[in-house]
Length: 534
Image (cartoon, rainbow, N blue to C red; front, side, top):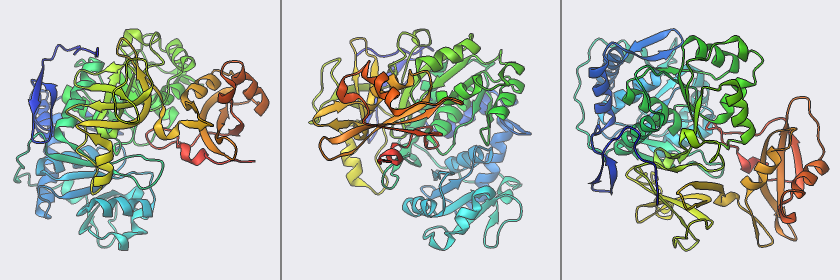
């Protein structure tokens, strides 16, 4: 199957580890600590980390990391310990992460959108020994503090640490930087990252150094980063996009990263212009909000040249609208997930318009195929489940052998996504397996219906789901947010779809809402829409 070649011309080899055999880049760091220290040696005095008024060179960053690592070791953190991190998009996150990596500890990034019970579940499930928490999220921890079964110490990042906690500043301002560094192998665990599932309890995917390095290098390769580049991080760092795809690729490339604590469109415009940001990796919705802001023309975005988009569908209207305002911008679309350490595919910049409905070709280190319900490979252009294989597949789910066994077969990860691969190797994503609608035996792919409805001029965004139906088993329901100032009826939407799709794909129910519920990764939480309102 044809896949993308390395833009950088990096040599690819087969390597073998105790848990896997597969393709990797030949000249690669063996862990994220080595990756950081390579960059510190190469660009010691180059600005690398920017957040609000705080700016650190790569050397300054590494020095603080060492002090934090020394402090954590004094407080008993050792190799293999699980340490929960509840921090926003702020420099304390990468500082804490790399301090833990130098000690060989396993970081457990927590969802900053969660409340008390949800956070307690992830902390307890991961068996985290220490919690690092920002003052903004303290009320949620405080409400469940007595439920935290494994936490021995809490470090509080903020003013006036609550009773029974330790100020994070004692780590950051620690004068000593001597500690015992862990000896790390490529297959060592680095993270337990909880998946952003919309049903049931989140599952903790075990991510490793080998996969994080592969992701950082593949992103750099796709983007073609140059020393002049500067990337912005405006997506959560507890998600694989923020942590691996944005943060780690910037460090590997030796380019500055601007961390935006809270995404607000006006502030985003100001930062992009002031900092002369050249690159972004996010959901397309952020750029759509950017170009549609009434203040857009007041700012200079001449430096902005690269965008890697994923997480939600990119429509023709969005892409054309963005490029109309930013004609010099090179855009690509990709696909990946937590369990694969992030990106697995990309559309070449120059083929965006021709291949907009695909999620691209496989990246150099990734293999993919389409399988049926029995796991048998299907020919090109046949629809089935997308399965992936690479050296960056998760080892499995923490304390969940059943989920691990059902997800990974002979090294192939079952994505749960329905799609196809064409003769040229382009992958087309049609639906989540669990979101495919079975209407009386007829398969309805929600994405196909969504794409049609989105082309209706009044529609801002849409999600299509299956709802229970006594006769057909499931019925099609469309949930629509209209553009500002627009109004529409259920019948006109149905008529528009009926003119373009088979009758069984036409929504039986149409609901209008102000906006669609999304998780921090930008994905629509369809489970919240699966009810009948009338």
